[in-house]
Amino acid sequence: MGYKRKDGKVGIRNEVWIVPTVGCVNSIVREMEKNAQKYLNENIDGIYSYTHPYGCSQLGADQELTLKYLSGLIRHPNAAAVLVVGLGCENGNIGELKKYLGEYDEERVKFLVCQEYEDELAVADEIIKNLVAYASEYRREKCPVSELIIGLKCGGSDGFSGITANPLVGKFSDMLISKGGSTILTEVPEMFGAETILMNRCRTENEFEKTVKLINNFKEYFMRYGEKTDENPSPGNKAGGITTLEDKSLGCTQKGGKAIVEDVLSYGDPVKKKGLSLLQAPGNDLVASNALLASGAHIVLFTTGRGTPFGCPVPTVKIASNPSLANKKHSWIDFSAGKLLEGVSMEDLSREFFDFVKAIASGEKKAKCEMLDKHDLAIFKDGVTL
Image (cartoon, rainbow, N blue to C red; front, side):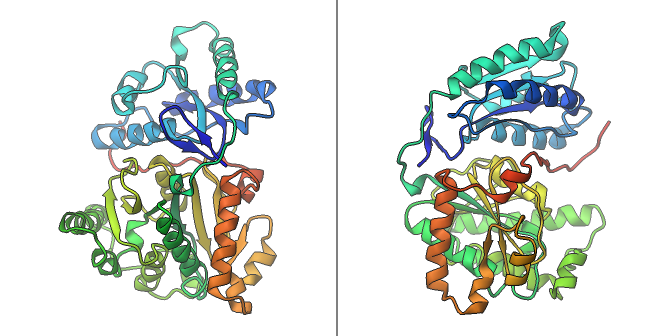
């Protein structure tokens, strides 16, 4: 049960988003969000502002990463309507952003440059009022599950992650793809050492070569900053029982199931093909999850052996690798893959999990992070700041 948008996409939430082009207006957009809550109604799932520290004093490819991310955020179908707020003097101003955004629905996306108005809050309030009215026209309706795009991500692992949570998500990915849906696998540094598993599953030679470049370019990024490419840097992974980078990488690739790799995406690129896509992004939880949503993921499936409360602008579903974590951090964890350790079969649990994710997509359930906070936004940065 989703929301069919005018551009042919399907959303799983009906929200209004306020997106700043630059961190200088963060306090302003938070105030806009606060003031706009009076317009909430039964047809709107929420009005949210998504702040970040970038957009000014960035150069070249570094600025491009920010503009590509913000464009993906603005295009996301979970947002029925969007207000983009600029300051007016930033490098990544609204004019530059529009070059990356491309064509857009002028009813759905509005722009506001704060320096152009005496009272930007009053102007924004009127714009948001109209955007809420526009968004309120949408209603949930039956949609094919093939419209779902699901991001695949793992956080801090433990010794059970490769036995329970990651294989469960891999099974889910295969099930969704078998029904015509799409999944996105990222965390390139956590593919190091297991990359040939993915390379051997590429649809064509072209995808194979793009996967080779994906891995090698990220290794060059590490080396450019004098970092090693063969170590697991996370203390949490080591404490959980992951002894080598290959251990972590083998768990990462499990989340992609057994599907053929159909495409390889650069950071900020939208999903173009059905099936499994690989995405350029780091292992960092917030940056990688946000990269998945910028490429169109409706939901991020996040496996964890350690636990984390964060949530990005789309539902970020936490899957615990063991029952102890699921019980201890029940306010964070959405689903326990630890049931596999208690005698439940993978076949039965995968069906249960598929129905669970579908219920979240249909609005019958909410991810725990949606009830805590879903404002965590992080953008990949690689370059000089003036």
